[in-house]
Amino acid sequence: MASVPSVSYSITVRLEVPAGGRAVSQITHVVENAGGIVTALDVNTAGHETLRIDVTIATRDTQHAEAIAAALERIEAVKIHKVSDRTFLMHLGGKIEMQSKVPLRNRDELSMAYTPGVARVSLAIARNPEDVRRLTIKRNSVAVVSDGSAVLGLGNIGPEAALPVMEGKAALFKRFAGIDAWPICLDTQDTDEIVRTVQIIAPAFGGINLEDISAPRCFEVEARLRELLDIPVFHDDQHGTAICVLAALTNALRVVGKDLGSVRITMAGAGAAGSAILKLLIHAGARDLVVCDYRGAVHAGRDDLDDSLRWIAGHTNGGGYAGDLRGAVKDADVFIGVSAPGILNGDDIATMNDDAIVFALANPEPEVSPDEAREHAAVVATGRSDYPNQINNVLAFPGVFRGLLDAQADGVTLDMLAAAAKALAEVVTPDELGPNYIVPSVFHPEVSTRVAGAVREAAGGRPRTEA
Figure 1 (cartoon, rainbow, N blue to C red):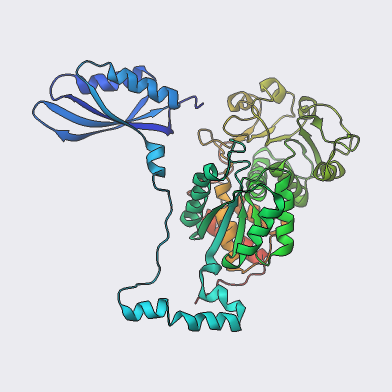
Figure 2 (cartoon, helix red, strand yellow):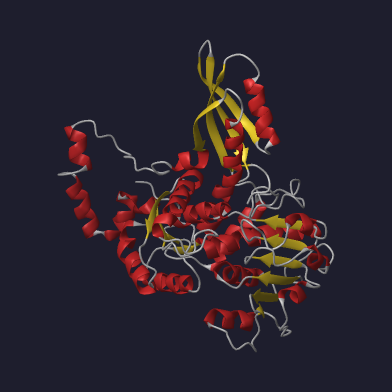
């Protein structure tokens, strides 16, 4: 539940009120007394005796919105005609559409875009398959693939319920990188079926963005597809998060004057995101790390290690610490959480070293209260938009795919991810850098272009092909 009114839970209430008197001021007063915020008030129709007005109100959650609507209905001489949830209105009919890039105004244009003219283009591609990137949408298209098994923080809610999220992801690709992305929600959670399905639809796409597939299956899906396909396969829950965390940590360490190779890092979360963050941090030079899951520290002596945990045990925790998360946080310089809400408190953060850095990224409720963490840590970041330093994957994936598509890359490497993180960090200038500004806004105009350029160079530097 949001602690303050949010646009995510905003409603528009259509009311009929007397044309004279104090009805309008009463409406504002009632909303404010109920804890809401009036963000707009528009007269829809006006008459001599009554006004029909639309009042837009930011609320905390669905129950709060319902309580405010009920309070408005109790105002004498005020009648409610309709209450609209603005978030649901935005999603009506879906958020994306397909549009033609070429005119189809007459028979000549139709005969070139489709039959018989299109046959010449098909035959050209059959003779030279490399031309498919030049002559079709493949060069600028990405499949956003999910099985609905780990959607946001909502869990295994299925492919239909995943579709609004994948539509949103496609809209972000277009808005921030000019990429045509297509939501592909699969009605299977069988690893073999997912892999085979993506393999056989891959010819139409220049890249695959795996999304919201639960661990540990997501590791196998990604690994097998990378072996099978000659286009990049990017799991955003892993690699997008890792890029953003490394970029943010690079700048946070600059703020406190510490070095990645010498700080002690404690991580909570050994799933998809945690594993990818860990691998990228090690690649970038981190040396002293301890990773905890729900059973405590991951170490070689545990009897429950799968392949992923075994890799973590072999590359971290050189001292063999076998205790819990609270003990692992003590004397750490950095805490990175991609796990569960409320597993630490301010007292735990107080046991960290001076000038501590805390990234509590569980969303919507972080591992530790940001307000409590800020009392003891020098830099605090979350995944939320209502605190400074939001770690948001939209900072990474549009630019990463723009660079991959432009370079006609056939895969994704740690060098590319590290280059993307470095470029993202450098968007924040030395004059801007501070405890409350370690990552740029997602709307910063240079984010996508800088990240794309760095990835393109790391991928081989091939320029974007024009038809």
